[in-house]
Image (cartoon, rainbow, N blue to C red; front, side, top):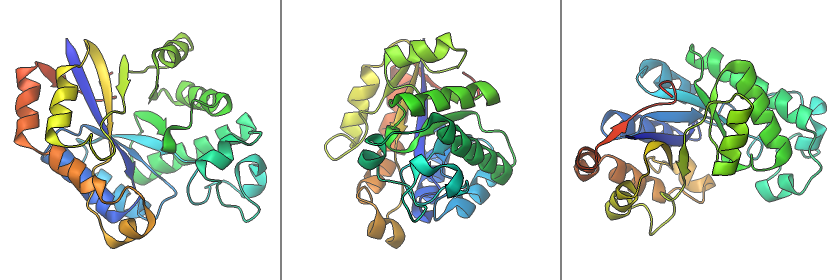
Length: 251
């Protein structure tokens, strides 16, 4: 049997992202989202999440954007001198203290559960950085502590996480992103190639509000993803291919 989790990253990044994710859930095929707890629209996203209990909610763990929730003095390997996070390439080039990562991950998970008033069901990382050993270790530890499922990027990582008691889908696809890969035809092709088992499809729907356009390199693509994810042809393809939508809560 083919089952599909459609997870929208970046809830909380901007109001347009939040609104687009909720619309992609209500009118389209998005089943879950991961929540940024240190972002400009965190409070707005939390309000929408509380009002939308059918949207499965996880935590988008952030070490590469804005500022930490923890005291920067407790996590010096993760922050610049001004206390802000490094960009992805800068962070991954550093000597990272994995225990500091876990401190910040715990803070973000706890903040998410407080804001949305329910326990998050899964975790993943902003900019997909948890292929780094220290970050992956911290994701595993957080998932084991909380019982959350986790995104894994490769079959090898999936098997490692499962061996350590962490629930994870059978497959993960990041093909649905960037121009040339986010139109309806692209998604229909992707759906026709799904393997049996549970697949997580990562997506980034949104509405291009001024804040997002001014600060994100992926602002203009989000409305295209939103239009695709809410297209009736996509829903029809799920029925035709006998693909059942599911969530991390049901994993």
